[in-house]
Amino acid sequence: MRIDEIKEGQKVTLLVNINGEQLTFETVIEQSMMNKSMILAKVLYVDGKIVTFKGANLTVDLVTTPEEEPPQIFKNVTIALVKKFDGSLAYSIGSVVSSKTYNRRGNFRCFVGVPTTVQKMLNTVPYDAVIKDVSASGFSLVVPQELKYDKDQVIHVVLNDYIEEICEKFSFHLYGLVVRSEELDKGRTLYGCKFNKQVAGIENYIMKKERVRLKKTNGR
Image 1 (cartoon, rainbow, N blue to C red):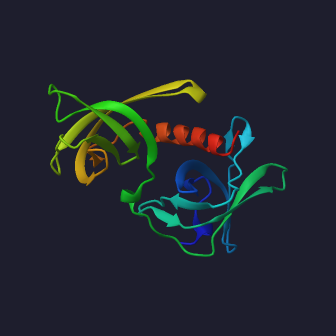
Image 2 (image 1 turned 180 degrees about the vertical axis):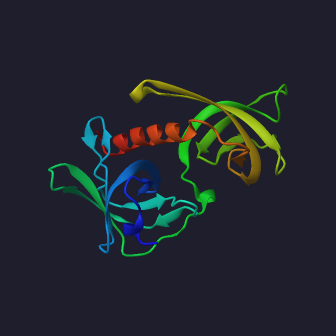
Image 3 (image 1 turned 135 degrees about the vertical axis):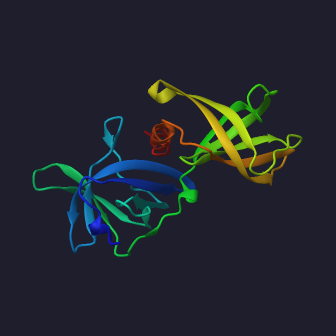
């Protein structure tokens, strides 16, 4: 699809890459500029300041989900802050290249790095671990190499995180199906897991955490 075929009022996700780090934001399309390969989207604010999406080594991809179609991704879109006829501000987002089908397994992963305990099932002995990252579809976990988990095994962790900058606490019970493993240094193993059911509130947590990270990256 063309970017100007995205409907007004549709929510879209902006995947921002800055020097190897990834951030994610959601906004809403205000106007589709038909036959101009461009759309206008609602501006986003962090602590009262507009997010400008400017910086060295910064690229942005846009993901949209049309009705009854798979998600679509527009790679490396251009974003500029513009003033509309009524004087309000909007993002002008453009792409001369058509979208491609977005693979949900490539969902944005938010770095977490918080300690937890892991269990093979409830009422079993918990072991110390670290949640490395989390996405809308799963999480990854770092454990000592002596802990062994088989592919397709379900494991349980609790994600507790307090985001000091916004004074907000989050807590999630995560049940993941092991899909991959990778040996790391210092006698550790990383396990990648996908959720066996949707986790309510996890995307809101990811969005808030990444907004805080963007603020730090921009030095504000």
